Length: 503
Image 1 (cartoon, rainbow, N blue to C red):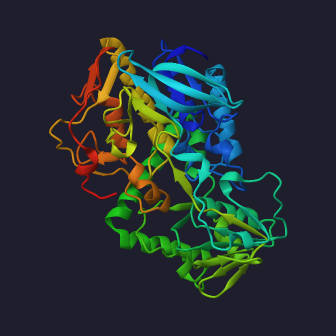
Image 2 (image 1 turned 120 degrees about the vertical axis):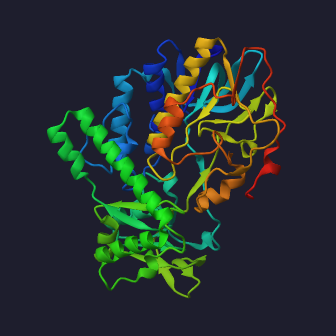
Image 3 (image 1 turned 45 degrees about the horizontal axis):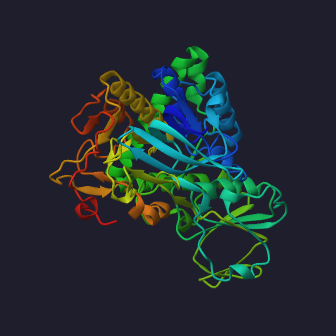
């Protein structure tokens, strides 16, 4: 790979990166590209996580690509099924030779003189190499693969059993017939509990505060009906839009009528659990969609609790003990295994150091442009999915836009495109994500901002983004186009001081 130059370099061979490669193949057939992946296999999240029951937390008709229908029966799919779908995509579009495994990006440096990124790679065997590209498309997700959020619980060293984080699940762990405590109440915890409860003696989900939990059928009956009477692609399209519009409707309803929406979710829990349920464990202190709702397929979590194989405890941890966990209420939870499903460590641009013409890029000082690029950073795209819908809906649109931009630059002979803030400093800023989730709040100061107006404002709306990214003109007066040798635009706006909402 020494001294290799490609038109586009995609970072990450997960759901986003493979999708980006297909869009490039279809929309920019004359452009050369490569995919670098830090791990030894493709799949990203769906290969990294190996904990019991690992599955999608969105339906696969929207988590699947817009160019490849999801044909399996299960709408909420397990990781092996999603990996099979990804491998099929790689085979169909002959991408295997484009992927360079065990190549981790450690540095990416933009040169306006060359109109190229120089990307430094560390190989799995300890060696290193470089590759140059005109456009750098980051598809590496939003969290660290190497680190997770692991609170330093008092007395941790005293526990006589095994402590496991879901992100680093050991292959040889045996929990059959054992007492398990899962710390957490998010998507990972509600997946783990019913799955482990099938063979464990008992599984306790220990939460500091509850999460909204909604059960949906594992199979989409309308999708299956559409398939029987319609061509495959049309059936997929109808199902996809049915789910998109239903998701938008429920999200807007939750934001506009939070009390009524909250009551409906809690009533659904009562219907699942029976009137005798202690709703303390299922009633969050925040409104729906201030954090993501947790989806459980076919009521599996509720069934595990009703069977007595699992239970929920809402309390705070005082300390770990030899036998388990002492709670601030004075109770003790006995455990042979403790699973710390305590969250992710968010990153922007992976762990790589990014610089433009010798100046380091500090993403916490940058403003999002159309949900794809960042102020003052040329020829750099990043895939970030929706917080209120499936990741791939936005990933597909991001890749389509990147292709449109590349084709526009090629047609006009301007190989540099830089989102540029107005020099008068008039764009106010807010945090890019308005979620109250812990993993977001812990990283908020290091995340890019969003502006108070278009195109700096982030949409969490798929139909709006279709118009914004697929149809609006590329040359909008905000992107500054230039030829090689032109210095990067340097607006006077000082983003941190302009923040209208404190990070």
